[in-house]
Amino acid sequence: MIRYLAIPDLSATPARMPILREIVFPAILRAAREHSIDFALFPGDVHDTNFYLSNEHNSILDFFAELMIICPVAGVCGTPGHETPAMYGALERIGFVLMRPGRVYGFFGTKPGLTDFVEITREGDEPRAIIFGIPELIPSRIQQELGYPTHADYLREYVAPIRLQFESLPAILVIHGTISDCSQENELDPKLKNAASYIRTEDIHDAGITRTEAGHIHTPIEFRKTCGGYAGSWSEDWSSIGFIPCMNLVEMES
Image 1: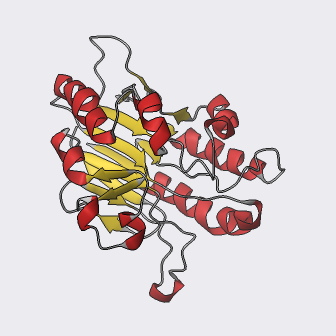
Image 2 (image 1 turned 180 degrees about the vertical axis):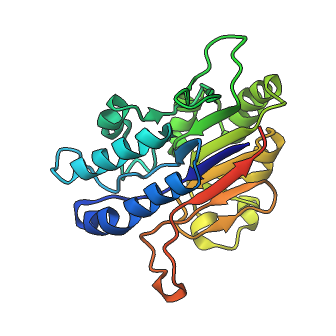
Image 3 (image 1 turned 180 degrees about the horizontal axis):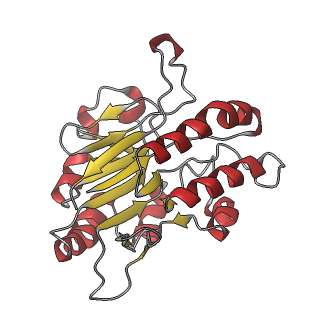
């Protein structure tokens, strides 16, 4: 059994740090401890603005350092207007794994203290689960970053064959972007219909992904055509229904 938290869209800014420090970060740490998770995944937009030189950024580093005492942590870069890979540099130096396209990562934890979460680089590696990461990409950078003209091509020609090499294991996709069960021309939601970069759930399903953890849409959504969805974001005003969406707890057989 593998148990993990998916935590998209923390959307940290200096102005939001008080509620992050007082409510959101403690809730995540409490859930990680109470459920003895194996790892935590962050599907983009840890940051909402470039403030990694601000003193407030120390609060983010302190949170991740405490979380990484509990378990390994990995994620992908989010919306280019909110954050860049360079903004994850300080987190990478303390152990955060920033996943990049064209690579596959494995969770190797088998014993207490041996919770390795690293890139798979050779045949014979035997992880308990494999994980793919795709950051949010503007259309002009899809070919450059993925090596394929569309997300569908990347999923079909890169992800699917690797998934078949590990077909007995869970395969998790961590992605930031617009994902829908509909084809874009049939989409009713104006934001989704006009999205510059669009991924269909059936393309993810056809690649053999066990579960998709997505970031970008701040409303909690579970997909219909593949297992996965958006956990939502604490930054939305959900006080009227009595909870702060922020994370999903996932269990799967390994």
